[in-house]
Length: 250
Image (cartoon, rainbow, N blue to C red; front, side, top):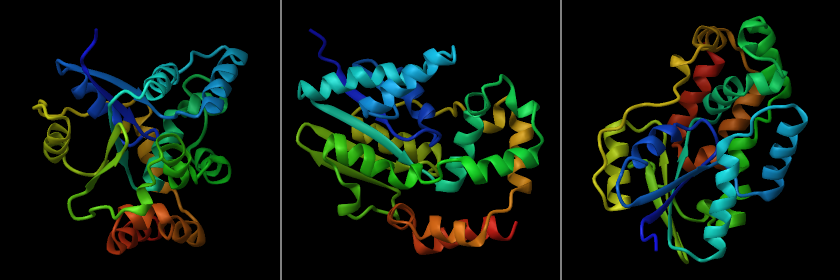
């Protein structure tokens, strides 16, 4: 019988979750899964899309099915999720998935940065981070994070629902704070965090930097993002204004 503590890193993509997953997975006595969705329709659509386009499925979609079984069996689970400036998160996710978007390998090297910027503005699903918690946590865990204040000063909050305890923390916390918060939540001492899956260390890092340097976003679009329920819940008014000013006055 496996008596290991069940931990699930369950969050939207590109919020620095790989760093936490890699570090937690080294701990003895912890069985950890890493997923982005519990929506079976999303999972099946992804697997079907990969088959149609001869692309390898992301491992976390397979792990999602394991977690659904764990929840159905009412196992005690600790969940860790992260939040990030939504526009930076979207740009990072856009670059991470460029090859799937264009169905070409090394897409970053085949398109001019201005073309990538236009593609991002016109085609990317910008509301993904804004609706993720309602579409995932609320629907599949019965946890509505927006019904309880988020501690913006500490940068994290713990939510409890039946057999599930969920830690939501901000990706912009430093690695020492993240390590301490996650260690306390799991009741085990983690090693100092090392960053993983960072855009600035990818093969597309030069293109990514040019993208950030050149992108200009419409005022109304930026204001709408930072006036969203998501942005106001996890970040202070001052922080949202700072985010907005960065994109509007680069």
